Length: 376
Image 1 (spheres, rainbow, N blue to C red):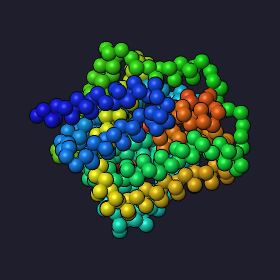
Image 2 (tube, rainbow, N blue to C red):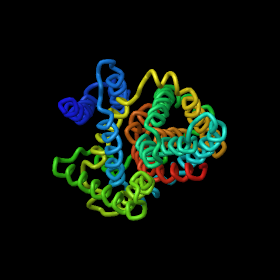
Image 3 (cartoon, helix red, strand yellow):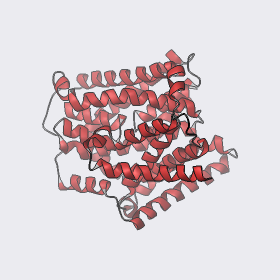
Image 4 (cartoon, rainbow, N blue to C red):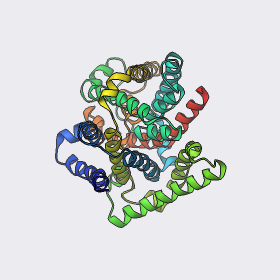
């Protein structure tokens, strides 16, 4: 019991420490808090003499993702966001088409080498249209074995880490040779600054508690409604995830909920718990021994979708900065927008990148589940 209590305390407190350190240490900001938590989790999970309770880890990463989805969506004013991001939305849609095509092709190539390859395709679509939380939600909903999820996510981190370095370093110079470079399509208005400030707001304890209670209510309603249709909780999980997403979007149309401070930052905190717990479940020896097919599957979809996205952008003469920020929003999500916008010298695109990320959070689950069931 003492070991479980210590593990729960660590899972709850370490993300706070990382969030505090992010504002004080450049290395933490460069790596991103979610990568730091994932790496620390891997380190803990592979200490030979340290035995971590797997049930606590499983419920921690599952529960944190389910609670984070509504909190992420509360801040999304979708009608206005879609109108604001119209120039960048086209580039984002090209990215969606690219990942759907490559994930479908990868299924046919790897289906004899990967168990439940259709589920892997659905998960990979989720992560490259909305982010890791979508991948986790889809994997949970489809009942994917945790080993497959962890191995696929580990391969994803390797590839996305390399691509993130490219975006921060030479992407601007390389893409300038093949894409037009226009003045920013989005001006740095006070409205944009206000939206960023709202998303970055931590909120006070009462506001955070209200957000968490609302999220808990949505999760509870989703579970209760799904059990009316499916008596088996495991079979109801796909419907639960989609209901949580739908109810989160519906709640965002209520102005008081949309403007409730602290919901977005609370969701990011929950995702750090998720990364820490998930990393702790990674068995490095197993990863090195058994992940070759999943590694190449992930690499095929990742590299193929990026190259196809770039080719389509060249064909349709998409602005260079718009391409970079839409690609970042789809693959990484909101926490990575600011450093990439800073690297390409276009901070005015931070708001638009965050807007695309919120849209990705909303549609990623639908796309992932749909592809998985179509390929099955």
